[in-house]
Length: 406
Image 1 (tube, rainbow, N blue to C red):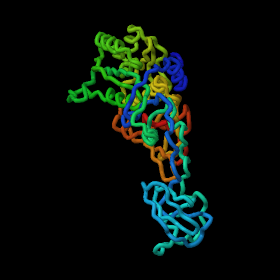
Image 2: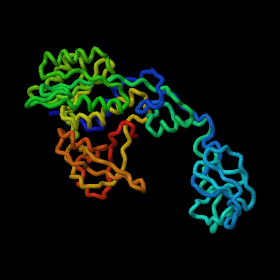
Image 3: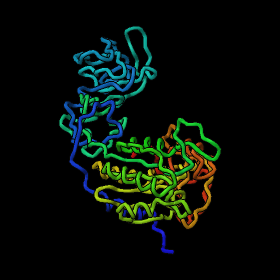
Image 4: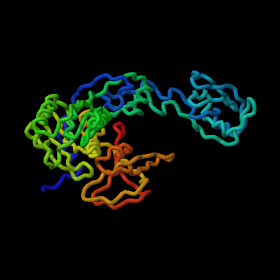
């Protein structure tokens, strides 16, 4: 038996066979652009903020006059046009987001001062620009707000909206065809007979592909029969998708017909089998401009393979600047067992605390067929080949599962 590829070797082979991005764009309303890839650089249409802005509710003064007592000479609610002015030993009542009056260069929080009618006392000194966002401190007019190739996440959407972009040009989503195989499968809306299960893989992969930036389409289930599988593959390949995903039938069982059927359909095999857990039977090949992934039938294995290999391929097809998802450092919220000869990916739930520390806690699940346990995960803890067991509180590396995560 030949040596299985490592995860890194397999990913390199996948990315090497991804064709150049198609130079095609479409206009998308901003609220529906999340998960797409920006096709053009977007520039700031003005300075942001356009005037010095208060970060807190409080009182604006000249920092050089504090500490001391000041006359409150005006009030500046949020939304009031800039133009108020204060002089020496004067203060302005101000609110979060309000324009700081001319003459003032600092804002004290309201809980840090003493108010007596129209006078306010600053017991302590205050630094210049304290609690003030200076003009153009967030972005200058003409600066790039979001570069071509950027994934449009909710945060990017907010930035684009702030510079007046109600719609943006995005890279056209690569078409993805999904074919679930297995005589045990029935459509989601059917009541399974004894020995049957609902087809959870196709809807789960549809969701994943959409979040990863693809345009997915699901075909009818193909039973474990060579004639039926051959017909289904011809139908799928005739659609000329950028990516074809086949789930089930890729291992070495008596009814695992997919590898032979793909070969007969003219798909060139690049590799079959990767040293990872779960998802070892992964099959990958190409036909023309179509990338073909044979994913295991177990739902967790299929989704892990999709996150690790299909997501980077989609990113490269879309012209993304960051092809491989970022790995994050986290603190374990529970123990993780030692690694084996295969790289292991443990489903986990992540949380960030007030100090922005990322915690990753393994979810309770019973293996690669447990879609219910996996549904609680939003990341994968990476356990290196032959890595040591780790206890709660130790550091680990995680791969986010979200499509809009870095």
